[in-house]
Image (cartoon, rainbow, N blue to C red; front, side, top):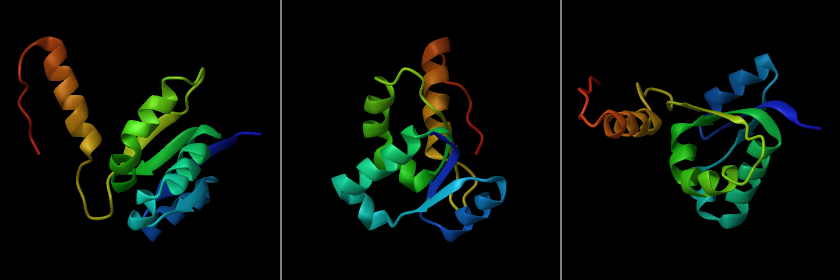
Length: 111
């Protein structure tokens, strides 16, 4: 059975997502250097329909996650949220770059 929502992050504030029924996984940044821990995180994401991932975790697993999701028939929705105290995510910067390339013009970026 697939869990509907999984929340993965390094900051304990992500535990607040239990209120909406999310399966919360707290990880330590240094643990994500280990392949087995990355595999556990990817497995949790694949068992869900929606994954809320803190930016620090996303940056660490994004290449592996992209490779895995390319092979999945029905990938979950991935939502990257900023870390506590941050205003943006690296995902916003990636999207800005992709859109700029698509239209052929470097778009203005307001931070």
